[in-house]
Length: 190
Image (cartoon, rainbow, N blue to C red; front, side):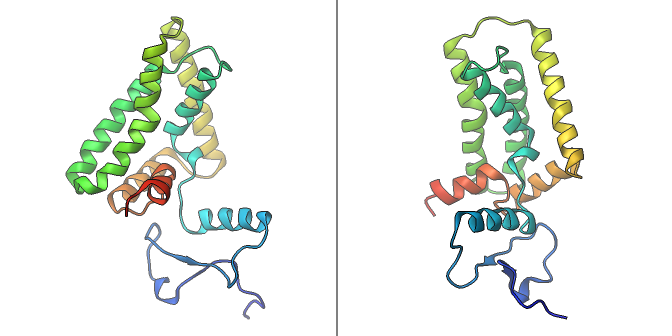
C-alpha cells in the first residue's frame, strides 16, 4: 500500500542500489520548504537519511567547544594539550589522505585543520593563559572523552564506526563531515 503523500525528500529511482555512505542527491517537493519548522524538519530528515555525520559525533568539535568555552571565560582550564594531541592525529590523517587520494582532495581537510586546531593553538600561544596543572587538563580531557563516548552510546553508535565513516567520506569526497560540507558549500571555488 502506497502512502498518500510523498515524503519531503526522495532518492532517485536509479540510486536505490547505492550502498550506505554512497553519495546521493535529494529532491525537494515542488516549491521547496515554506516555513522555518519545515526547513528544520527537512534538515534533520536530510541529515539522518542522507548519512551525514553530525558535529556531535566527532571528538574534534568537542575540543573546539571546550576551547570556545575557555576563550569566553566560561571554563578556566585551557585545552592546550588536547588540541596539540588532536593536531598531531589530524596531521597523520592528512598524510594518510594525501597517500590515498590526491592533493586536491586533501585541501578542504587541511583548511578544516587550520580552523579547528591550528587557530585555537595559535590563539592560546599568543594569549599565554595562566598556567594550569597538567593533571587537571588530563582529568578534564578524560571526563570529556567519557561523556563523548556516552553520547555515542546513547545514539547507538561507536567511535570506531564514526571514524571509519569519516575516513570513507574524506577519501571518496562524499562531503558528509560537517566542516567539509560547510567548506564546500560556502568557501569552495568550484
